[in-house]
Image (cartoon, rainbow, N blue to C red; front, side, top):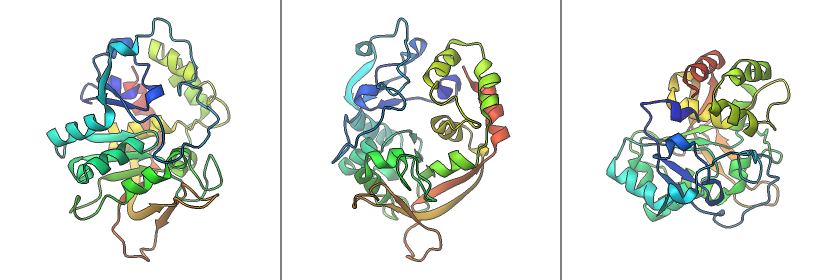
Length: 283
């Protein structure tokens, strides 16, 4: 919801098939495209932590009909068309599995060389994990797509620096430290329809001592990079084999492989700056 409040942010919405059914009614002019309905090879089971609709299964009165605003054009084709028409201008924020980005790369091998930036929420770079030991959920859902994207950024398509910025699970978990009290009593007290809806959608998350809102933090970084206090360029790859390691991310911290540094890993955020940004921009 945060980007809807930023006038300068030009928005395009891409979604997995079953999650492309809800937008704020006053923003139905934002183009929405349906993406891939499943992972490239295997779609692993999940526990519907965010509900069957990915948005907490909240009751949304007078929800608009998806047929009124979802484009008939596939999200992958739309992505390719948009970045080709505006090379070096578009930032893609990936808040879920990378299936659609991988398909775009396969259809257009120079796709990543045309974007300004790709911000990826996902991956466990310090072995913490959240869906399995050492495995983060988004990378767990489609390791083949992760592999394609991470291995399609090289000197051919990005002669200066990789456009990929990675917001890993550990940065969200250990380096933001925004209290749940602040989330519920300060941010959550904003008296708007959007906040009321978000409070319902995040009901499963509003527990514990700290607020770990991965999507919110990644989008905030996209809109205000000054929130980042440290990030480093590394070579990273993902495991696609094995029974316990599919989706694991391996980072060459010491440059032992002398490989192309394909990701900028966001390591620390300014929590106070992030809180100010959210309070000033939440619709």
